[in-house]
Image 1 (cartoon, one colour):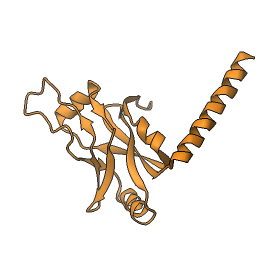
Image 2 (cartoon, one colour; image 1 turned 60 degrees about the horizontal axis):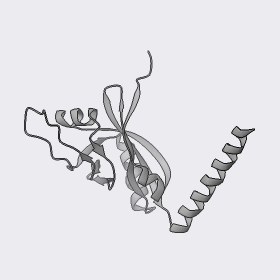
Image 3 (cartoon, one colour; image 1 turned 60 degrees about the vertical axis):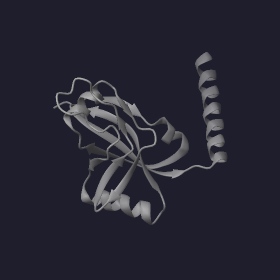
Length: 152
């Protein structure tokens, strides 16, 4: 049996810039039919999204999935909160990390895995401005090294 194809829908580039990603987890997302159709059309935005743990359930909050014009029923709410499908042990671990350690959970990527919609969430720590500058300097230096190697 072959592994299903992974096709990206939306990336949260801002999260990778503003935060240090400590841990990554793949989760399923509970969606309505018109939301899946809108995602197939590429109508998703992860900016200003986060994950919240409430009553032993994980929720994706602030993710914008645009309306699907050809929906036969009433269109979905673009910024509604969506339930994430995780195991109980994963939810407990995430809850512990956010309350005790003061970390945050943000979505990093929304993608199709076969026919299923998945979201990669990250446990993150905020970066200070000087940390961001330092990371940019390291990235630029690595880019220069790679460029010099290619030119040889």
